[in-house]
Length: 115
Length: 117
Image 1 (spheres, chains in turn blue, yellow):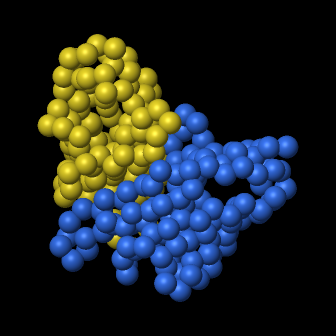
Image 2: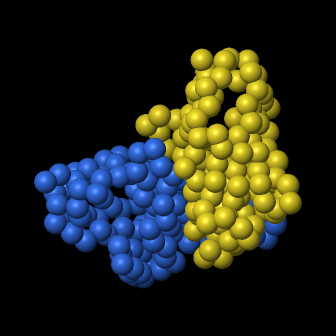
Image 3: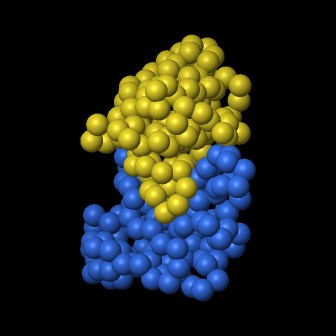
């Protein structure tokens, strides 16, 4: 199983760049790395996905080193509305056996943004 | 539909009663997932469907929990003889694919909050 480890919480201020790192030492060759954002009383929402190197979209960047054993979600210029829990997800798939796709979320990182 | 729909949004039941939670995934999404989230906790994987079959049921907490999916669409999660520790938000998600880059892109519903008194 590709378990993930993230910091439990992080604090920041509006306008700052926030970097959240996730460790996934047992990542498999075919696994992608996906990040989600969850607000209270809502289901998680997809933010960004990558396989290696760097991916950027309109809301975030994802940095993945060559060994892929970690990844860093970068949120530029955060605002109060970015206060949420951020989850790193690494797929656990059994393609060869045709088995299930147990996508296991980590404990998440509670980001708190203040004025 | 446009998104993943779950019902009921809130359910209060008495200990020992059975409950049924429903998930209507995005049309065309072949993969469907159930997760459980207790207050202030992360997401606990319960079960995954590819089409109507569930290759991995190992996440179900006990034999009181069961799930089925029919027609490759709607899924129901049934909890028999509910216990207080079953109180949680039950989240359903669907994805377009089960392998490849799309497999990890899940769209979640708003969840069903279950309270067992």
